[in-house]
Amino acid sequence: MREGSLEAPVRRPLAWRDPDFTDPAKLDAEMRRVFDICHGCRRCFNLCDSFPRLFDLIDASRTGELDSVDSKDFKPVVDACTLCDMCFLTKCPYVPPHEFDLDFPHLMLRYRAMEAKTKGVPFADRELAKTDRNGKLGTLAAPLANWLTDRGNARGRALLESRAGLHREAELPRYASRSLAARARKEAPAVNREAPAFGKRKAVLYATCFGNYNDPGPGLATRAVLARNGVETEVLHPRCCGMPTLEQGLIEEVAAAAREVAAALLPWIEKGYDVVALVPSCALMLKFEWPLILPEEQAVKRLAEATFDVAEYVVDIARKEGLAPGLRPIEGGMTLHMACHARAQNMGQKAAEMLRLIPGAEVQVIERCSGHGGAWGFKKANFETALKVGRPVARQAREAGKAYVTSECPLAGVHIMQGIERLGGGEKAGPELVRHPIQLLARAYGLDGTAQGGTAP
Ligand code: SF4
Ligand code: SF4
Image (cartoon, rainbow, N blue to C red):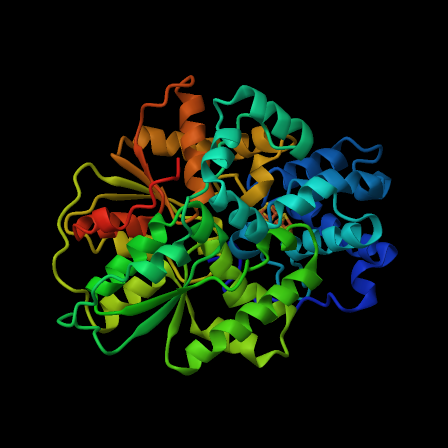
């Protein structure tokens, strides 16, 4: 629920094919209109670093108003936005249908689209966003890739910092030596024919780049839990959802990804399969961003309607058919970070609901941005800001004293652990990171031995 408004927010389709969308003068006029409203409102002062940068800029200007701020100084405001969507969803009373028609994250995206068109995207950023290509190479040469990116490899990390702009202290995703899709082709868990949901559901797991190449653990756990609950699964990864290129304003490339993935998954939907996306940012793309980018494409619409977040799907089974028995308590309690892109799916706290299906589960929920924001938080220019924005989450997780920390966002979980490490003066002691809450459910079923990725930090 947003502060100050009872109406559900409406998101308008992105007019990215309209030449006005990337027209610098028209964009500047819209930035000034929106920034002036924000200056008068200031509700979002503590959500991220974008708003403090904007308000400091205005306060330090000659008149103390937007009219004396130079437009070239808007760029740091845009650069600090991770596109987490929290201002739109949780704070802003002026989003559509309000007449102010304000969508701050999409305005930041429009600025990036204008920059991408007029100046291009830096080479290193373009290469980093090729997550499918990088994932294929990374799994082929996993020991080498993991050696190079290890935080303990001072020389390797100095090289990555100077060449790719990746902060040397940022914990980077490791690569699995076999992708989730490859493992799924060889190892299919036996489907429980006694489960209440047996015969009622089938699901395609959209592996996602992270779930496919970096850590197959959450995908294997999802398969195992669903099989225990009578749900047959297939694992597919037609290609990346395009979130990394969306962050760079390359909307045409996102549209190409949407068309290709929708075309690959549509035949399965027509055979009665649901689609379960393993990472919340990717689920958000399938469910919400793609239909705003390609509102006229029926395959994209059908895919959006058929897609579930992992926890949302398990809770749906629990509500409609009932879960298979066999869940055992997990000692020590768990801290659950609600990832922004899970919250942005407007589905409620589904991961918390799922974990509370474990008998006696003590679940402490933290509903605040971890500060990471995808690849944004790895960058040399952003890493310290990302830790600063995420410090309240790290502090709460540390003080909670639970045995486990988990988040549906795999990058947020690691980032929170880095924040906890900083608060502890570099000590690595603390709660155990479980990469995705579904792995705790698998553990409660005694299935964790079948659900290990084995390579993630
Ligand atoms: S989308 Fe997130 S990071 Fe961007 S301005 Fe809004 S709250 Fe800040
Ligand atoms: S995005 Fe909305 S709620 Fe946030 S500061 Fe601007 S006008 Fe206020």
